[in-house]
Length: 313
Ligand code: RIB
Ligand code: CA
Image: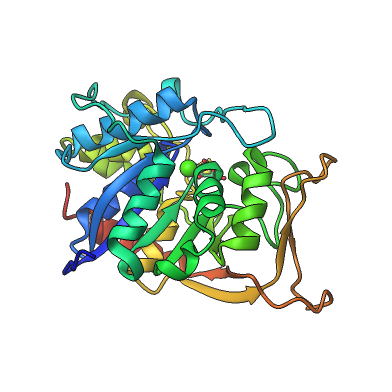
């Protein structure tokens, strides 16, 4: 067991521009010790998400953080990718990575860190939950062994962003999301709150006028190239929701309000495939299996975001 001053953090991720913002925040904060990144296919292929994770670490001069490559496809469904993250899945002037991923598979790495850090460890999962579901299948006691599993995913009480009913991460691998919800007693931060985690165009454009890494972070915040930023952003564009960053912003500040609910994930293959069935009225009589974010203080989110990024830019 390793004793650390700051909280050990393991991030399972599919970078992805908003993933990259979360990684930057985690590295900028002295409250957390980022002990590793594990990658999963989602926004992009596993090759691209693993390259992007390493490129973000290269840009932020943190190649000391190990990257373990994970699952390249969902447990059951056919893979697809998102189309909002730009060529290769990441905007900004990110360098080619200079450090290879470690030999161990992501799931092996997660299990080793769980046993190494125990109840100090926080696991953030901000892509499809394939790696986390497999780790839970191998080590069912995982949730009791660590401080918690914090997920960005789902739309518990709102509409989806990839189908009318389903959010991207859960829709990409519904079987994995179902396992994590049923076995992982997760904290679930979904579109219910992350849709309102927006950043004003003016603040992004100001960041873009500075030096690196701020310029690339501005591109990640706006899901846009630097040229687009310099040309001026359309204030009305609603693509500024920095979904994944909300998970860590809430660990850094008092950003979210949670309620405990019983959740199921629809894996039926129909029009609501991958959606969250949230028992807000308690009609199932089932005990809650997740704590779900239901409210966000957007101004607090923005101040935590920029106060923390100030450490980097
Ligand atoms: O629906 C938002 C989620 O899908 C985020 O994690 C984003 O990175 C994409 O993976
Ligand atoms: Ca993501």
